[in-house]
Amino acid sequence: MEKIIVTGNGPLHGEVRVAGAKNAALPIIAASLLSAEPLHISNVPGVRDIDTALKLLTLLGCTMERSGTDLSIDTSHVHSVYAPYELVKTMRGAILLLGPLLARFGEADVSLPGGCAIGSRPVNEHIKGLQALGAEILIEAGYIKAKAQRLRGAHFTFDIPSVTATENLLMAACLAEGTTVLENCALEPEVGDLARLLVAMGAGIQGVGTSTLTIEGVESLRGACHRVPPDRIETGTFLTAAAATRGSVRVLDTNPDFLHHVLGKLEQAGANIELGPDWIHLDTGGKRCRAVHINTAPFPAFPTDMQAQFMALNALAEGSATVVENIFENRFMHVAELQRMGADIELQGHTAIVHGRERLQGAPVMATDLRASACLIIAALAADGDTTIDRVYHLDRGYANIDRKLAELGAIIQRI
Image 1 (cartoon, rainbow, N blue to C red):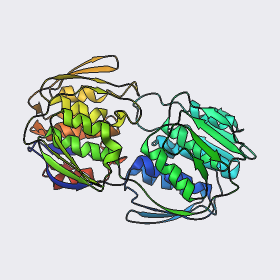
Image 2 (cartoon, rainbow, N blue to C red):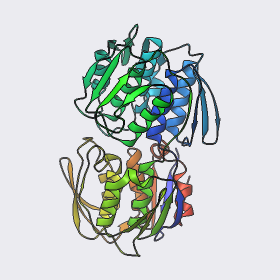
Image 3 (cartoon, helix red, strand yellow):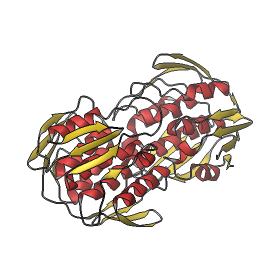
Image 4 (cartoon, one colour):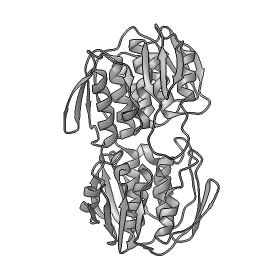
């Protein structure tokens, strides 16, 4: 099993380019199933979750060509609607196959999803929404078995603004008969990006970027070309790493509009932020950051996927702050690992009280999920001595070559 060893080495400096967003690429790949014509995608990140998604499509009968960050998918010869547990268990995003398969082929047999063990992420919203569109759904032996001769337009309101449920129903509704109105939709940038792709494929969608989406169903969709937007969480991770190490980093090929709340918190922490059309520059002036209060909530508020990284920043910051996790009940598993490195953190339910320390101490630690992996790397970069991080396969699910990119910023980091 691979491990990463980080030797604390002072501030990060330089420029780094971010990859395409994994959380945008996965629904885009799923959307390829809605049309018999090829979908051409650029800026596809080279991460494990994408590899898993493409293996799933290959099992279904899709063919593809992949060159660097370019990907073409042909779904004209799909012969199966079965997504097995062996692949789905490693990636929650596989649930996104449910809507497109059901809408185009009239049935789907998809395993209940897996992914990081950060808390309960039920599929109730997906199932209730598809049932509202006329699907017959049975959950049997760990699989969602869905059938519908053709989905019908409906009015559906999400109990919570779930990103993947919004994406799933949005895709399914594109091929449904009649008009579908979805209310209380997730506002994350990845949802709007998927909607724009679907419009390019011939879908009729109104309200893109709002909480209410109106979809006029069509008989079929066409192929299209689409570029995956930059990864806002990778962007935030590099900026937070620079802040924690008292460094100065310019992040390229990104979109500052996706990160207003995160950038505001970094400025509160004392970092100087400069923005360009596709770049963000953070400079701490070599100073230690101040602790900042974090309260996670759906977009456009502070993202849960940046909570762990800011926990590491607060552990090294001046002063004390609270970190409140409102999305996933088990997303504090990185706290025990930070405490092994000397972090002063007290847990009270879904709130962590963090008292910053001047330095942490390198130690053997274990990554428990994707963002916890990034948290531990950030802490290790600003710690004394060596930190060995085990179970870094979590890291590779969502970050493309992060160890190489950090090395180019001056980090002493190696994979063994």
